Length: 281
Image (cartoon, rainbow, N blue to C red):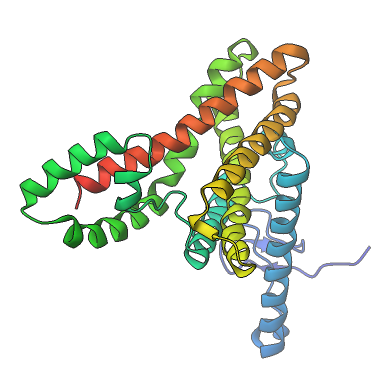
């Protein structure tokens, strides 16, 4: 066994005879730490650790639904990125992809709200009243709205994910799990949802490169929507089995209920963004 010479912790001033300070986790300063090579080693180590945790978290998120949630609740924090940081990382990735591909999943422009959403008739009435109050026109207001809704969609999206928390809490009420279980489950599911949306928003531009209509194709839009909902349902089916121990026909029915609610929340988030942006700009 290697003998460790005593050293004084520079942070808490404790005399230590172990490789790391038991009080604060500090380690002794070595001459190499104050060289460029030492700095490079620290940078390389930091990126290696972050990348390995991130890649492992992404892999488990996609290939083993529910495992990240169970691991977090068991206290296995070191091997994986936490649910909130993981969600925020995927959120940044999603909106970066959406900006590059011209997607409008949540950054729904005013024109879409007025003419191609389930609430378009109601939106036309609200917008007309708002424009009259502001004494402006749609042509002048639309660019301001589109810019504002894009910003709000990015900053408020975590509330959409957390709003789903109450749904599994009600569906699996008999499990008597604390609310944190359902919150972590929701964050992991919505991280997966955003990853899928990253792929979905990249498909229309690829379609247009091969002569397709791209974003203008209603048929492609419908196919993508159905595929996404089906993928969400499959994920929820396996995740509920892992986290809640759901089995049999009841599991299928509960998965269907969760999937329908997810679709409603996604559409509801778009509509809420319309209201917030309309009366906030």
